[in-house]
Length: 317
Ligand SMILES: [Mg+2]
Image (cartoon, rainbow, N blue to C red; front, side, top):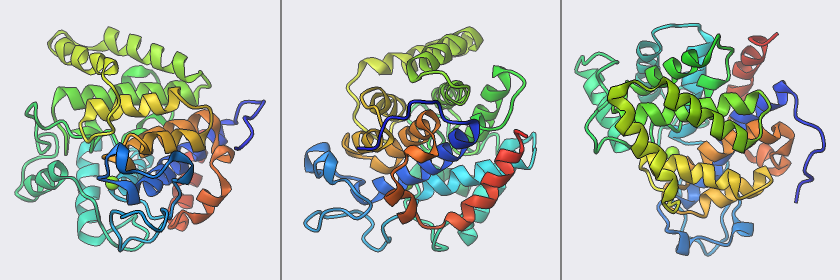
C-alpha cells in the first residue's frame, strides 16, 4: 500500500493529480464496465489488465486506454484554457470534432459514448444550438456531463459563481436538465475546495452549503433530489445522482488513491465513470505522486495530456 504522505501536496501536484487521476480511474474502470458488483474480481485484483478468467468489456481496447470520459474532460480543459466565455459553443464544436476525428484519444478511436450524448450530438448536427442541444427531460439525467466537469474547477476563478457558471455551461450541450446542472455544480465546488487544500469532508460540506445558498428558487426541489441521493446505497450506475454519490462514497471510505478507485469500480455497472469522478477527486486530494507508478506508466496517450497540463499549470504562475 502506498504511504500516506505527511505533508500536503503542492498545487502543481494536485492539478496534475486531478487530470491523471481522472484518466487513470477511467482507464482502470474500462474493462470492468457493465459487470455487477458481484461479478467483479476482488478489489486487490483490480488492475489495468483484469485477471485472465474475467470476461472483460471492450476486449479490443488495450489496457491503460481512457474512454469517452477522459477524452471529453480533455476537450473541456482545452476549451477552458482557450479562455472562451461561451463554453457550451466551443465544447459542442470540440465534441463534434472528437466524434468525427477522435481528437484527444490514445488510438484515434472513439468508444463507449453514452446514448444521451449521441442523441445530443445528432441534435447539434441538425442545427440545434449548443445551449439547447442537451436533452432536458427528467429521464435525461445520465452522468455524461458530470464525468467531464473536473477541469471547470482547475482554472483560477474570481468567486464560486464562476465555478458554477462553467459547470452549467459545459453540461448544456449534452445534459440540459437542472438535476445534471446542479450535480456538475456540486462536483465542481467540491473539486475547487480540494484544490485549495481542504479535506474531503470539509470540501463536501462547504460545497453543499454554497450550492444551497446560490440555487435559485425554481431549482430548489431539484437540489433536494440531488442532495437526498446521499441517503441511497451507492450503485455505480449511469444516473447522475447515483454516480456523484458513489464517487463521494469511494473517497470517503478509503485513504489512498489506489483504494479509492478500486472501491469506485467495485460498485459495478458504470465502473469507468464512477472511477473517473472519484479518481479526479482522489488525485486532487492526495496529489500526483499518490497515483501508483505502475498505473501512471500503463496509462497510454500521455503525450496528448502533457501539453495541456503545462498550459494549465502556467495559468497559476
Ligand atoms: Mg466511458
